[in-house]
Image 1: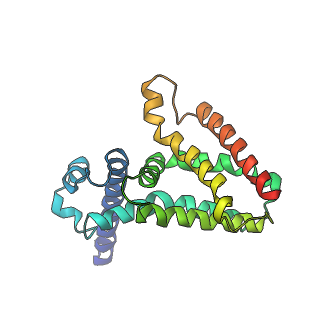
Image 2: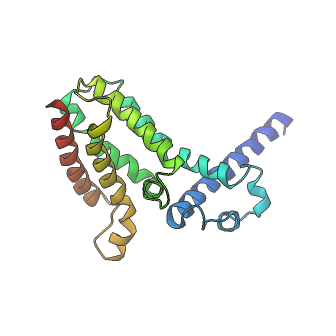
Length: 212
């Protein structure tokens, strides 16, 4: 085995470990919050020692920041990609389904963002402000591309989008409760389709208001 092959294998194992850390930390942060989640819990869950986490992340803040990016950057990228397409009003009406399907791939990310948006204390958390700001920016570019009035999403024009995002995120936040109450599989195709319809109606009302 060559030295280059050995190096490649070590990097591959390190990448696999990093991915496992992010996945475990995402679930724990979403379920318990930042304060209650410890490095030891994350390490125990994936079967490594606490100090090994520091080989991948400088500390808890760095890990949390990476978890937010891991969970939410795909959503921002997806919304941003729509503004690069020739989407007209009829095409825009299909985007809520895409949002629901994307969030279904990272349901813990949706729960984590809503936890941040509803965190207690004085004002919105810096992490929530950062990521929701990125979503607003991507949504504003989409609205502008579609020629909708108020594409800047400033002031009152932001309120419908905030309501829509709370509905989208809230569904996945409540998914464990719905499952425990016997409401069916929240991540199954039937219930995701139903949620897409609900979100679609809200989004249509939002678009109609911006066109007015």
